[in-house]
Image 1 (cartoon, helix red, strand yellow):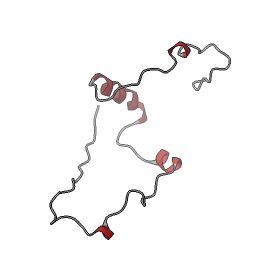
Image 2 (cartoon, rainbow, N blue to C red):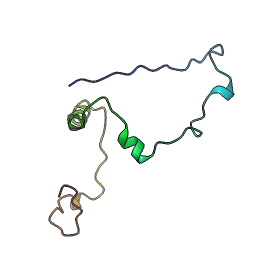
Image 3 (cartoon, rainbow, N blue to C red):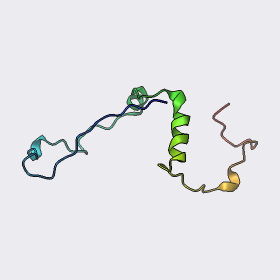
Image 4 (cartoon, one colour):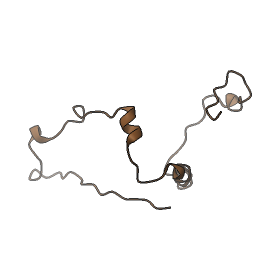
Length: 87
């Protein structure tokens, strides 16, 4: 499994490197991506690798899953009102 690493620049706390306020883009003023744009985005890994990456993150305790809200409904796959997305 290969992982591409992207570098990023941290903001300095010194006054010398701070840009004037009018040149700093505001997070609220930046355009949010639409669903089509997010879907069209190219990621540095294949879709088939997502489950492996997810499993690796779980094993390394880098992500935590929340407790199920309704564990008694987890096995309702035979229920006719169950929404099965794999069919």
